[in-house]
Structures are given as structure tokens and as C-alpha cells.
Image 1 (cartoon, helix red, strand yellow):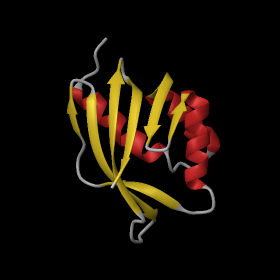
Image 2: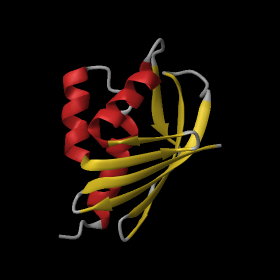
Image 3: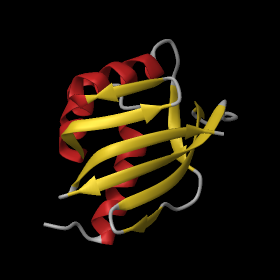
Image 4: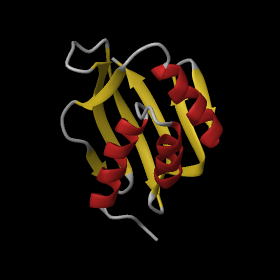
Length: 118
């Protein structure tokens, strides 16, 4: 079943924020709600696969800091392909990183995620 544009945009927003959820149980629950079990996350220097690969990367990003992600504008969706700009940094502080996520949603879950740093 195809997902609607509205559902896919909600997935993009949830994807952005789940990477900074500090509560392990909540993060894992949300991960399973929004990502396909066979999720593939592409970064310039690595590929993370499945829930375990995603969880390991999320823990790396949160280690030793209180940083989080914020949307930088509204995501755009076209037939399951979603483009979302973001910033990453301390709450209320200057971002230390920015980028664009390109996600592909299928059957109501994110199946592929490309992370691009600016």
C-alpha cells in the first residue's frame, strides 16, 4: 500500500528527531515504528544496516554531548522520496553541522536514508 504525501512528511520529521532521543526504550520503539527492518542508511564514510546498525549510529551521535537535530525548513516529498534539510548542535546554541537527508519511504516506513553533510 502506498503512503500518502502527508504520512511521508511525518516520517521525515520523525526520522530527524529520533536520532537525538536519549531514552533507549523510546528511541528503539520509535525506530521500529518509522524504519523498515531492512533499513539502509548511507553516509559518505559508512553504511549502516538494519535496526542494530541504526541504533549503533544513533548512540555514536549522542555520545558525550547534548546535541540534537532541528529542521532547517520544510521537507519536500515526491512519491516516497523525501528531502529534508537539518542542523545539528546544542539546544539553543549554534549548530556545529548541517546537512540534507534524502529518504525513500515505502509502505509507511523509511527503507533507505542518505545523509549528506554540507
